[in-house]
Image (tube, rainbow, N blue to C red; front, side, top):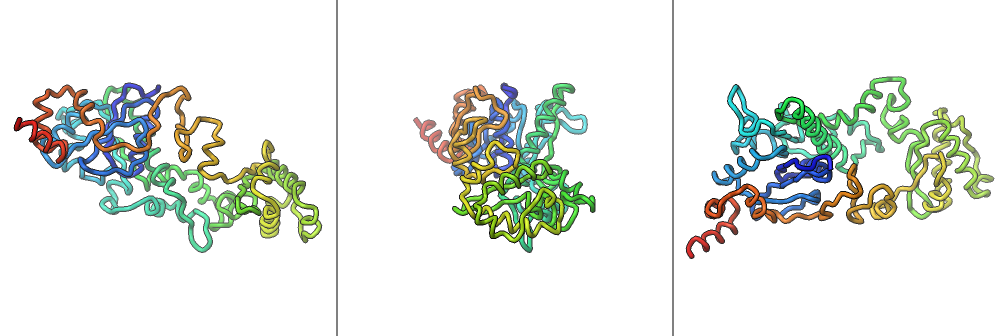
Length: 396
């Protein structure tokens, strides 16, 4: 696999950091998550990863972290600015600074934050909706009266986790040329703006039918009846996305042919292919499609448009989508397959990871002696339970 042999250290954090680590793990990297001892974890993005529990509050715990990172290819820092520096684990320790040699100058030090690390919001708490808001993208999303915020896919995962992973991969390519690592700075506000380059640029064009008008009046923000979601008779939904004239024509022809005859007889207005770009007809077209889809079920309409050029498909539930996934078999009924991973790849399908589960395994790989490991336990570097166990053994 593409990233086989690379060692990644991922400090436990909220979803964007673990998602970046998941992308690397799914493509062959060995990813070890650093957890706090005795901490529970709600992280479900842990497929193929290991966990070691280390107490960074004690000196020997910090030294252990320093040793682990010194042997890694990549570290993912999900904390606010200054946290790793206060632990003595900032990038300058490993990459060097001011002519001083670092402990691991090939290290890719990836830092992922919500707000830009040097701006006025750098020390503030926030979540996906806040980052999308400051990026300018949330204001462009459709909604009645106010923008409707999506699931936390926009800033957390697209602008955060994915952009961080892309930065890591680019840094690895550069390291292959120069032999040196570097810092990768990813923040979700900037990442979201970058991911939204297409709509943001179109919003600057006053004559752009894509997104040049007021919110909710354009082709891609719910304004166009030929790019929208419609409710069916059984409560299911169909999506219509026929932007191009030839696809709109195919949709209208298929839709009209599948409608009940009495519906057409009683309709005061009927669409034609010319209705697509005549905004004066959009209100009538919206009403026609809304009422028309309500004449039958979602599965009926899905059958009508299956294998056509109409750009109309049903809205599936997560379980339905997993069951119909013909690209990559899903790891679990509720989640997607592994993007970009060869189908023959063998990785763990687990979506829960007990903090500290692989502590002994990782310590063995570090080559620590029995005495050194016992001392870590006595110091509390591996947590309270490990400390109690070490104390009992020490007395024997």
